[in-house]
Length: 257
Length: 305
Image 1 (cartoon, rainbow over the protein chains, first blue to last red):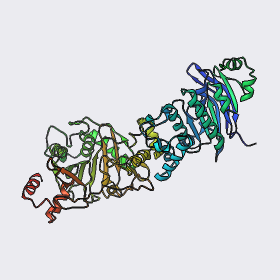
Image 2: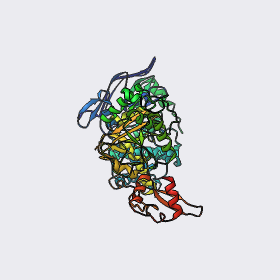
Image 3: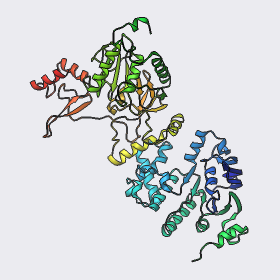
Image 4: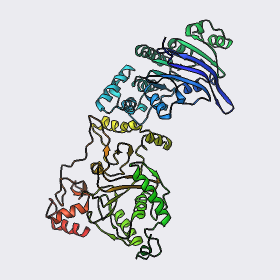
């Protein structure tokens, strides 16, 4: 078996006196989708930021299998190298699409930005590729010159996903990608995400507090509480046969329709 | 400074060139660094000048630091020698340095400019000083100064094309007409100050030294003589300069940058060269535009020049 795409060793992060996460260790292989669930304040987002190269952890290592160099600690790279990696290999989908989109730039420009940042200099090619990706996330390419502000929340989220995936990253981090969306839009978005992840062979780390989202998308699941991983395993196994008392509580507290 | 300079005529209440000698040295040190790293923005301790920010305080400080008693100064605003900004800056330097001033581009050793590069080719014994309002070309796309510095340091300039992309998507062509971003020496992205993009091609491999001063933003930068300057563009939408369907109404020039002048409230208008010195030279050589034969117009232009 090949080296894991992402390997985390004894990772911890603290904000002053507050310990956000500690002793996190896991490995993730290419093509895998890892879900991280837990209550709010359990350190999910801090962990995700550390994994994605956005926040240097207080201790521990995040090893990423780079295309040329092989397994390398993200935070041992120089900042320009890490920034290059983040805009080519890694993708990040935020909960609020307005954090990641340029609201003053058209939808097509937003998708094209990632290509231009990576050196694309042919307007026609950038535009074709942006239109193609808008289509893939079920947005009307006819509206590609409209600003994101004229899009609904769910459409903005899909636009953000198109913007993230257009450069074909190997590993995508998603922080509550369906948070704040209504149930039907959430279902369509999940369907879309599942299709894209399978079709492109993406690896993804998805943070969510919604167990249904985790069950639908994730191959493996990590349950966090108070900054620690209390249980991890295959998604179905964890959700159908929870061992840790907190996981049992979490699973039993889902409303049954 | 030599003793001879100090005793030169000029307002005795002020040091030669208005600024004190330490300040001039500080600015010259900054300029040396700027010339050594073409296009790099060097911070400097901009002084309060006796005119508001936005009126050319950066350019005036650069000029004041490098001007000597034997320089011949030309000041232009929008290409013309007779506009308010040009007249007041010229008078300022006449008062504080008593140097000779000229309107002849070829005669000047030092040219301070706002919004234009003279039409006539500059030579290697001339210096062109630009007044710059916003020295940071990334400002529109990246409001964080810390992030701008990183982008410059690591040449992550791809984001700059987003603005150009938006133009093409909206207008079908790159609609930006002034302060058009340039790559200096294939290293630093720079703002050419609000000159029309018509003038961008003149910047590349120019024989004269080009110095830029931004007073409010406290930045200096420079383009040394014979340096490559490339305007950004797309492969399928190459950089282009403005074109006019008409020629200068006074001198008939077709190859210069033209200003539109409204003549009445019934849509009457004419185009004239924005470079007043260039236009006058052509008229002296006998070139005549469609509106130059008219006695009233001739009277007006002679009065103005």
